[in-house]
Length: 342
Image (cartoon, rainbow, N blue to C red; front, side, top):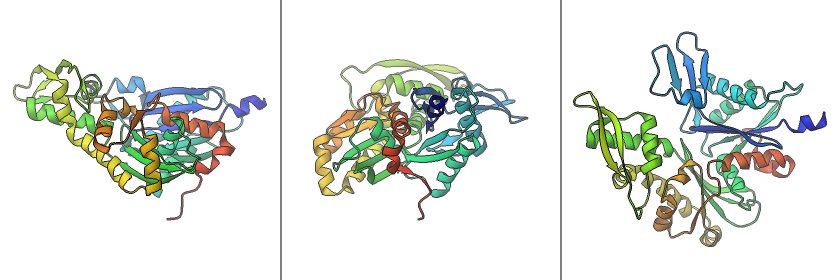
């Protein structure tokens, strides 16, 4: 019995693009897109996660597929709560007598109200206690950085809704910046570019696929090209255009610049001692955005800092939050227990 009690605490990386659930003693058991498909009339959930993501841009009037989180924060409270409950129940198969403790990751620039909404969603989804950990902190722990030592660790976490840049030392965040330019912004930039340059309307999912297959932040030795399908805005008919990797890079220029700028600004606000440490140790890139080819090169080129991509960038935040659950007592100090009185 004692064993089953320990195995229940969970950590949730509630992301704009994906939600990951880490269960104590078991690791990451769930990794699904943060998408909910609702029945328009009754408001009932039709699908969640992968199944719901396939529906984006393809739904009839009776079904709406929505992403309840926008820019890293809860945009639609009810569906976030339902989605969270659904994911937790999927992992938490057996009905235990007691409710789990939950560690939830939030962006560092989040307001007290937004923080309360996240906690509330956790309690509604059936948690006994909800703890909050800031995303860059979780990402740093997950990437294996020595966060408790008196050295500067810099982490750049490029997610779906926010890019979090933080300098961490002695188990706390020294300077941090959360900008709402991240994976989704890159997709939107591709949509806008194709509209402007080729009069081609693209769906969100197609844009995301282009970003993954052709996207890059720095010139590559071989620039691949691919066919892109969408709707011609002039004739209204489906059309195919051949696009090269170099062109996609031009499309991504503005948001990439904003991400690099956030890194620069954070370095600018870092105490000189820690800046020296970062020069030695380098910057760690995590989050789905770290998978964009050449992003490490680009940041290295523009800041002169060594840049390393975390081992498993998509799971860093979930693994870090999971570590908080595993070593609850030791890592208690990194958790934000009650909203800080501003």
